[in-house]
Length: 98
Image (cartoon, rainbow, N blue to C red; front, side):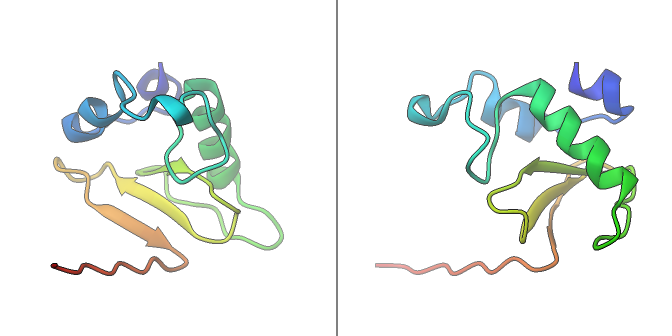
């Protein structure tokens, strides 16, 4: 449904991560970084593609996986087969080994 509505091909790794959704406590959420509700994801991505007075329009090949607070989007780049993760405007990652 998402792919048809947005005209993109989602990476297989994304599909495996969300179908079935593996975080039962967050199923159906739209409050965290990773959403699993298709209609909300389509709506979010259409809004991003349209842009606004405060945010330029996103390219159609980017797919936002959720919107935690509207200030740090996390997206998949569907123009690449493996769908690398992109941050907008910024994403910080910290990896630690114990």
